[in-house]
Length: 220
Image (cartoon, rainbow, N blue to C red; front, side, top):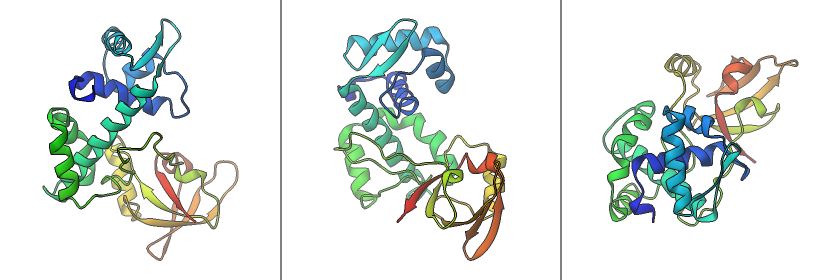
């Protein structure tokens, strides 16, 4: 079924999944905002997905993924992250360009091409942004908390979404905070105060607003 989905349908499934990490419901307006489409277009797309058993849709209430819909959504996210890794590792694109470019052609790939790209890349476990590439058997992608959720003494690996404002990416780069970098929280000031981090042996300070836009994978 996943092979017969259109680009808009796959993108809608990904958006719904990301908006419902706890198996909840997403509102049509939120999906439309995420995709940059009109609510009418998203409503028509959701109706097609519901007709195929991929979502449950209650008008004026919300959209929820079915079991098969969730698997299709995770499969679409897996493909996107594999293509991003291909663009970065094989074609030399910067990590923050890969997200935009991947969407332009990932939906046209046959499954066998995705599988061969994955093998050619030596089975990567994360995309260039630092987020995990789910396996084909994955039913839930592990949650990654924001950097600001960490407490002093905790160590984690950084991930930065492709949708992050370019000026913020540039600022993070000056601090050495890039995807895949390991950080340790040294201090966390109260009342939404800044974090003091150790990055590559140096102490850096980061405010809560930006720290909530960076995600992490904790290291035990």
